[in-house]
Image (tube, rainbow, N blue to C red; front, side):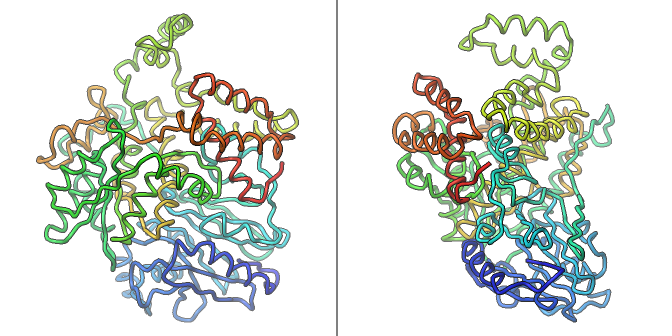
Length: 620
């Protein structure tokens, strides 16, 4: 917490202690607080000890105690940065990766982020300038929430929203625009949350906060894709070699640790490339791998993972699930996410992380491979039809056919694809309109503001033609706001640090400028990554389709979770009746009971209900 205008009251220390307790799962290895600038600033930290276990306690300062830092995450290239800084005359008191931040800040100020390769959220306090600099890594692997305090004169920050809830003057009123975004997407994109009093940094963003309550926002990175426009500086073979080299270096940096490192291994392309690269770099070192295993054989990837584990000689663990086990952690895990967050794959993600925590403190994952290399089916499933779809006559004909075409008949997916423009594929206007209808009249304008923000973001990506526009949109939104949120909260709940080699800056910048037909070949995505796999990888792994996991919510909401969803609808009808059109929610549930699968939207309403309870019953 920082208030440049006055010393913090004793209640600030009380809040910091409560916040540390609420974040103990993220740092069970130690905690510490310091006060600075005549008690106008308080920095607290809970530590998960990964590098310099004995000496890396935070907060950490520079030589004369004028610059301080607290950091969540890892700076992977800290050894290279440290060597340069020592050559420039800086003296280090620890072997910690975090200490490079204070010395690099002395050299470069806020532009230090340009030199960092890592996943991080940090606060640097410059006592000479009486300023605080908050920053978040390029892709948003680590979270950072903040809230104005003392009438806007001060600022409090934390790694999770739950740590800010004990603040005495926190505005807990409902951010209707944020709720509209959640109902449309299943998550609330930064900078909003569902509460007016709490905001979060965007991926690749920083804030400078100083005297006079001045707050300046900096954006140091945004994922951007580019049309090759026929330009081919590399052949496909050269591109494969370059991706291999960059990926190997990304994995090498992310293996830096003073504690055991393992890997998630699903048997898919991304995790197979991660695990096989670790084995290539560490041929004689023990490697532990983990895979989720499900009762439903159609969803079960364990046999593929087992093949890879046997080939690389890893100590492989299969974490088997049943519906009963998932239901046991259902409500507790939803609550842990604080914000409304409706990605049901958080359940197996958490369970695998919990199993891994008994063996490793650091895990490498394949997250980011789909977004950077064209792995989602909507990117490539109808790729050969793109030239035809862009003809108005084809779109008109497809639209006319869809009107009389049964959703049960084959071909409906292609027709729906052909009837849409590039913009409609990127921004589903009809679905957004149905979201707006859920709000009472006096709150529709606020909801419309939230939806317009989504539309503006889509318009920025629409400068590219589809599917490049969708790839950039996913890397800018879905990746940091859903995929990485899911993994961070699930892993840190178990005190496990998850590292993602695919989100290496050099690797992304290379891949995002390659011709689209290097990524998508013969209607299949991730063509480059398939060729990057070692020759020994069997065809059933190299050429298999992407497979995700979604619990059987459809069935659960009719059986095991029926009391929970009915309770959620009742809570929303009472808590939010002045904001939400309750009969819209009840109508969706009635459709579900009648046989239609409305489980995705029902899950969002259930999550929203529990998030409001966690926040103390937020109101509009």
